[in-house]
Amino acid sequence: MVEQFIEWTTRLNETNSLAFAFVTVGTMIVVGVGIALVVELVFKILGIKTEKIEHHH
Image (cartoon, rainbow, N blue to C red; front, side, top):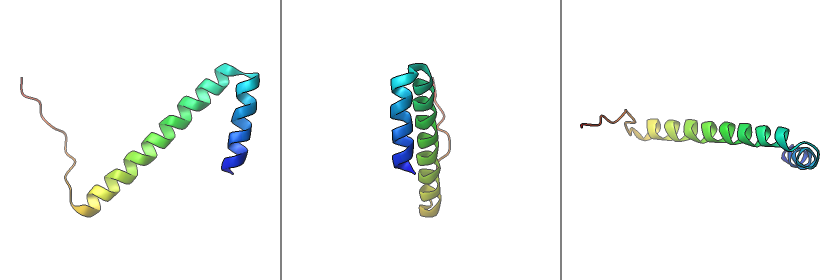
C-alpha cells in the first residue's frame, strides 16, 4: 500500500505539481497528528501530565 502511494505521488509530481503540494501538506498533517496522538497516549499511560503551560508576563 505504501509503495502504491509513493508511485502515485511520484506520477502526480511529474504531472501536477500543485496537487502534489497539497497531497504532501495533507500527508504531513496526518503524520503529525498521528504522532501527537501516540505521544499523548504514551504520556497518559506513563502518568505524565500534559496540561497547558501558563505564561506570566
